[in-house]
Image: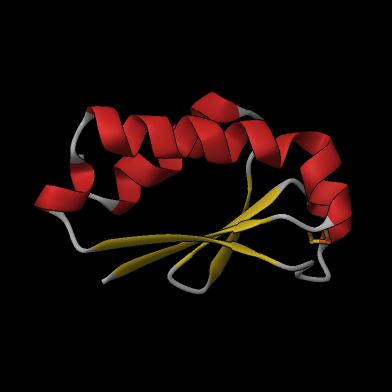
Length: 81
Ligand code: FES
């Protein structure tokens, strides 16, 4: 299973993770990724890495995502697209 967790702590939220989450969910839906890969997307509380945020975790690895397109790139990579 591919586990994606998007930080919804106040710092990451303010730095764009709300938009990143929306973009990722839209991408997954449009490409019906959940039918192709075992994918779980959730929100998380602050991951104590605010300084590098907005942050997103894929299978336990924390990534700093600058914007919606880098968040989507991360999902594509994780799903082998
Ligand atoms: S708010 Fe995301 S790491 Fe702190």
